[in-house]
Image 1: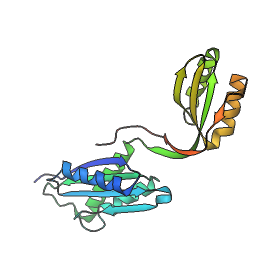
Image 2 (image 1 turned 60 degrees about the vertical axis):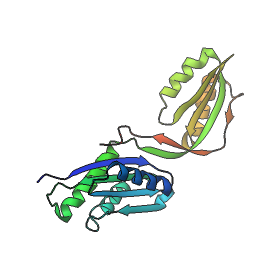
Image 3 (image 1 turned 90 degrees about the horizontal axis):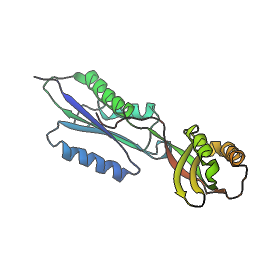
Image 4 (image 1 turned 90 degrees about the vertical axis):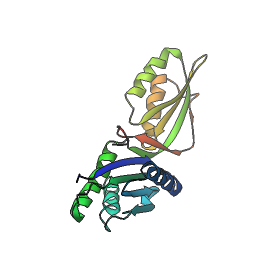
Length: 202
C-alpha cells in the first residue's frame, strides 16, 4: 500500500461555464484518478458558490476547500484537487486536512489579483519629462500601471489608476508635468490588480 497522491490546480474564472469547462478539462487529464473534488466562487460578494466531494465522504473535500477560499476572501476562482488513492484510508479528519491543505497551498502559490474600480489617464509627455514620469510610475506600482506607450513627436502614455488614489495621482502628475492640458480621463471600469505572485499548480 502507498499513500494517496493529491494534485491541485487553480484557475481564474469569470462565469460558471468557465469553471465547469476547467473541471471537465482536469477530469480528462486524469481519467484514472479516484476523485476530482472542486470548489469555485464567482462574482462580487461571492455571488455563486459551488463545490463537490466527487464521491468522497460528505463534507470531507469540497466544503473544506470552499472554506479556504472564503477565508482568503477570494472570488472568480476555481480549484480542483485530484486524488489518486494509494490504499491507505485517511478517515474523515485526514481527508479534511488533505483537501484543505492542498487547496490552501495551491492558492498561496498562485498569483492573486484584486478587482478595483479603475480609471485610464491618457497624456502626451515631452521626452524631457518621460524619465521623470517613468520613475514616478515605478514608485507607485500598487496604485498606477503603465498600460500603453507610443513614441512620436512626444510620448503618448496611458496609465491605469485605482479610483481611491485618482485625485492624488492626478495632482502629482499635473505637478510633475507642470501642466494639466492634454490629460484625459476615461469612464470608470473594473480592472484586475495583482497583489501576490507565484505559480498556479503544484
